[in-house]
Amino acid sequence: MSENGLKIAFIHPDLGIGGAERLVLDVAAALKRQNHKILFVTNHFDKSHAFEELKRGEFAVEVYGDWLPRSILGKCQALCAYLRMLYLTLVFVLFFKGPDQPDLYFIDLIPIAIPILKLAKQKVIYYCHHPDLLASPPGGVLKKLYRKPIDWLELKSTALSDIILVNSNYTAEIFRKTFPQIEKPIQILYPTIAHSFQRSVQKVTRRKPIHEVVKEITSKRDDLIVFLSVNRFHPAKRLDFAVDAMEKLKSLSTDSEWEKTYCVLAGGFDPINRTNAATFEKLSQLTKSKSLEEKIIFLKSPSDSVKVDLLNSCTALLYTPLKEHFGIVPLEAMLVSKPVIAMNSGGPRETVDHGITGYLCEPTAQSMAEFMHRIIKGSVKDMGVNGRKKLDQSFTPQKFANCLRSVINEAVNFDKKRN
Image 1 (cartoon, rainbow, N blue to C red):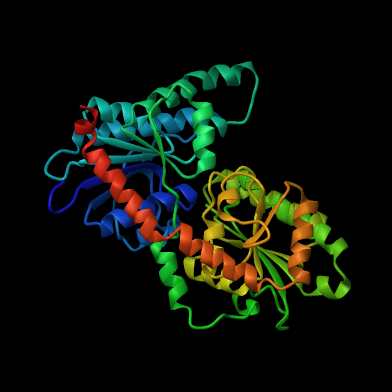
Image 2 (cartoon, rainbow, N blue to C red):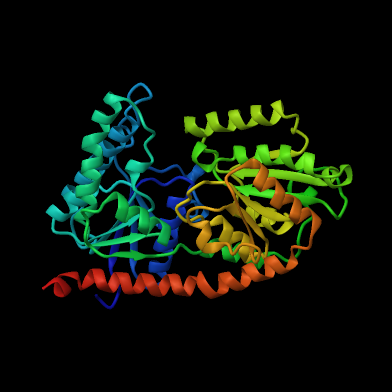
């Protein structure tokens, strides 16, 4: 490693707003603070729909292949994603020459870039958020035939990486079951809270009343109960649980309890993403069908500062995804000492201590509503304090940075270690 650090390129399909994008930005920011030079290479980048660091131009970004289709008549999205990534990687490897050529590549989401980079004798770290083949919904014979070569490419490409990282013990277990042919060791790099988000929290001088943050809540009483969900509008995030749970909560609550209770669904919303739009519409219709329009408020793509105000002003966080790979939002709630109600599955089982820092509910609206009612009935201060303690013990930026430093050193010395 040179005195001035390494030149590290991140190859990522779309630098939008999501958990995967948040993770790679946090990795890049930590490496930049360790004196490495960072470059993002992507198929698509829109400053109007990106995290603050990218809006401010903190990292160089190069875009290749955005003209290629994302789908064919609404189908074959995986195939198009692989073709876009192939084009991006080939163009970058063939034409990006000179003194700024990367020393190391960090790949995630679509591993098809890895074989090309290895043919070019490059060192590659692959971060597996979750095996992609598991994200594809089941289908008939044609769907299976279509997916078979893509799934094979995912396996073979992933196996070629020098180092494999995953985001949790849960994902490590799923990875081993999905790819038993890959015998390389798997390392866990737990995500951490974004440095920019922590700065936003530190800047807060007072907790705003919720009616100042969410204009749709007009009540100014100081005993309001506000459940907050922060997740992009996508079917996998199961935001319908929150809507259904509010209906169940109404039947569990007294009139006076219900009168002071609200739920805010704040999520990433990309106007060019059909899935976001369709999910938002379905949730809106579900809310109307249950006559909960006055109790459930939707917010699209809140900024970091608004998200901080929401977390500070809410009573508790609802985290609805099932089998979530890790989940960074519960950590953000713990940072501001708020209890978390999450599903008893996936990554949240590693971050939420049931009955201590929050609750792990069964995957039913009834179970979630029962724990929401416990929050309404009892004090949550100790849970919030306990959550902050767990965050400081297990998921600090320093631990994240130290783990990254070790991984980078291993990647740099990979050939020596292998020989």
